[in-house]
Length: 148
Image 1 (cartoon, helix red, strand yellow):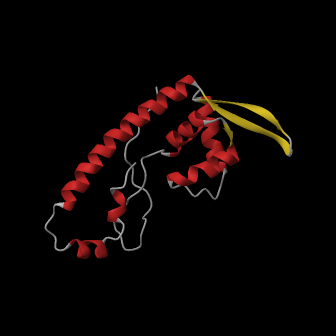
Image 2 (cartoon, rainbow, N blue to C red):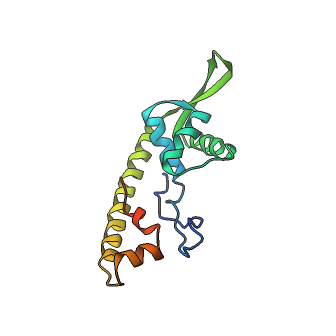
C-alpha cells in the first residue's frame, strides 16, 4: 500500500520570504503517474513534460531513480524500444496499480486545494492594511491562490 501525500516544506521561493513553501512531498511521483496516464514516454520526454509542474530538473538521475522505484513498486512498467535516430530507449507505461495511486493522489490534492483555499480566503479577509501594502510585502502571495 502506497503512502498518501502530505504537504512538506521545500526550499525558499524568494529571498524575502521566511516561509518554507514547497510542493507536496514526493510530488514528482503523481506528476509522473499523470504524464504516463496521458501517454507512455521515455525518461527525457518525461523530464521535459515535468516543467509545467514546477520542476527544473538539472540532474535526470533522480527522475530515473524514481521511475525505477516506481517500476519495482509495480506502478509503472517499462520496455526497451528501438529508436530510428539512435540507441534503444526505455519507454514507461502506467499500470493499474499506478492508476489507483494516481486517483488517490488526485483525491488528496483536491482536499489540500480546499484547505489552501480556506486559508487564502481567511488571509484575504485580514485587516492588515491596504492590499497593495500586503502585495508589496509578500509578492508571491497572489500566486498561491491560483490552483487549477
